[in-house]
Image 1 (tube, rainbow, N blue to C red):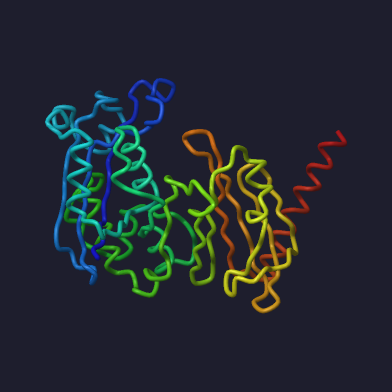
Image 2 (image 1 turned 135 degrees about the vertical axis):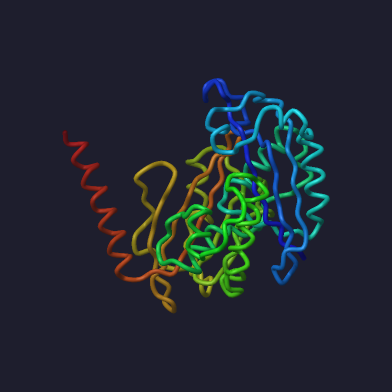
Length: 315
């Protein structure tokens, strides 16, 4: 097993969002990656520029940030050839690691656009090094920049930021500092390729929380009405937990609840309803260990929301 720590640079429509190609808000123009063995030692590298086909002119922000020219990209590989080379280099037992969640999603989105998504079957288990950094070094859940992480650890800045291979190296260096306990307990799931059937649904249990990813539904209402979506199970013992605060939401995407396990006490739930590129819906439900103080804070939020809605109806 090898870790593949990779970074992507991408371009966007230079004429604005309204003129972008459907299904491709960001076109990948560079792939950089380093390969780490099971001891997290760097053993190899990969780099490739990609010749764009959707957005051949660079957006002004891309020019400022990435420091690559249209002339450079004109000599790049086609995306299908580049991604085939990258995945062959990564190997069949590769475990991906990235800084944040976006790179793995955009890689798959570009693969789908170029009709080569079958090369990378999902949902994909990976390591979000940005999240691991926060767990290992900080109390807050603030999403830090890659440069912040390098500065925090006082690592040498030998390369320019915002080039794919450089950022992959920096991400790998931070990944090497994360404790094995945190890495082993904090795997992430990318659900761009979400489960399509009941059999394919994901039930994952981690240290202190659990995650459920549902099959697809035709509407948000159908998704939220599903019995398994509504159920709250303790993330420690997986037994049914009695709801203390029933599911509620301030919008139509995120729902919250609090339940009580007779053995492990309070657990809090969050449901995110996600929409696929094809207009269908699926659910990501997370259950975490909680406390009475968190329960009371969630109750205050629900009560305040109920009061605002009641006041709105009466005006």
